[in-house]
View (cartoon, each protein chain N blue to C red):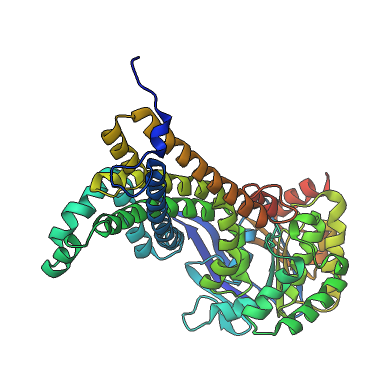
Length: 242
Length: 253
């Protein structure tokens, strides 16, 4: 479904991604972890072309992201993305946030889009907040709306870029629960997160990155049970003991 | 100070015989507003486009708009006024140039004044629009893009609606400036409020009364603008956000 082939990226002379190779199969949940600055956010932003890369290739659903022939907007509309800081549109009501791209990109009618939005809001437990503005919701609620906004496009895969890092601790679980539900239904997911509990419970595979390299790419049991690299061992000992 | 106060002068017949000096000044206010409003429409439309283009990823467009801004904001307004009025007609093709010079008063002064003031103000508006757009979190643009919206759609539905709310307070200052700056048009012969106050002073020697009246008229006019813009700010305020300038942060975190 998503395949990385020798992907390298530089900011001027600084290399942020070094020859990254991996792939995410349909229905697979892959957690990407690693210390800050390791390139994990950059890696998933390359999947829908939010970050350009200079070398290598990323194939999504048979299409190369960086090829000129690829209609990037159409490809993006098929991949849901959830950001660390939610990025809901503050001047729009919750329903309008979810409706916008359905109407403008997929060409759905207002009624169709609203029906879809309400169904998804019910699913993330926020139907009674449909007419509020994002600023009137808590962080956890905003992030659930953001997930609904991504799902409204009927995506073939969802990307999560540290979806719980900006949340107060008591709100993290409400967001993780929604994500767990999605994974159970077979959604293809790539999740950058520090929530190792979530990774253990939900992920099929874990990718560990450091200094722009994919250091470890293993099944969840192997990664937590017998990490091969010294760096992964160190990272796990730090992150699991706090 | 040996000065003969005479507030009654405002109700005496003006030198042009059209009415009292008070009506003479109020007609001047009419010209001030006609100049300022036309220039403001020009400034807002050009400024919004230039400011927006400066934030788009097209490099040559950005450079062109940058040059436009730097040329028109680094030359004093009064010099620009003279350039539009005296120099431009000489540089244009003969027919167009003489048509400009032969426009009957007050249009011969009014048209260059509006163009000059409009362009001058447009670069200030452009800078504020640019700053407003750039103050939004980068993630907003990414979120629009990630949903599959095109760049124009992202601007239209995501970026500009918030940017407009952010730049409303500084735009109020620009609106006030355009009204005050229209007084520079007196140097090219437009008899707007300041021009008329000066002419009244020359005919009557009642300098204090003439400029006191002009001052009060400017103050009241601008007060109306301030209150109107406040009302507009309240109307477009986004529920759940404390202030237009703080909402970028709130939305981000």
